[in-house]
Length: 100
Image (cartoon, rainbow, N blue to C red; front, side, top):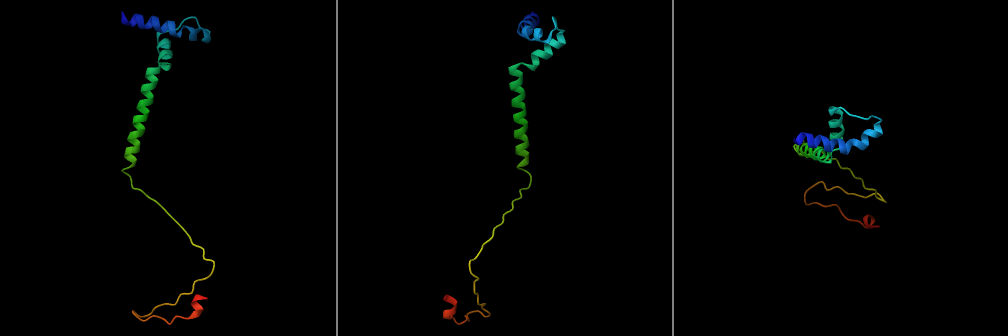
């Protein structure tokens, strides 16, 4: 009984689409395929399933190693004068030339 009601409703809903195809009748398989392709509940469930699979893939991705890379550079306007320290506690003599 429920199947008959479902099929009658299906034919009523799909009836407008059938005329656009130029056919006057559909087989049961064609009617079911057409109704399943346009069923909003089914389409919503399929979208939620895809979203769940994407979430699982994202969660699995966090288990993989992470790699990051960084780079930088500095440009000086004038060369820096550096006097090396060769011994601990012995500092080179400071001159005025360093500060000018």
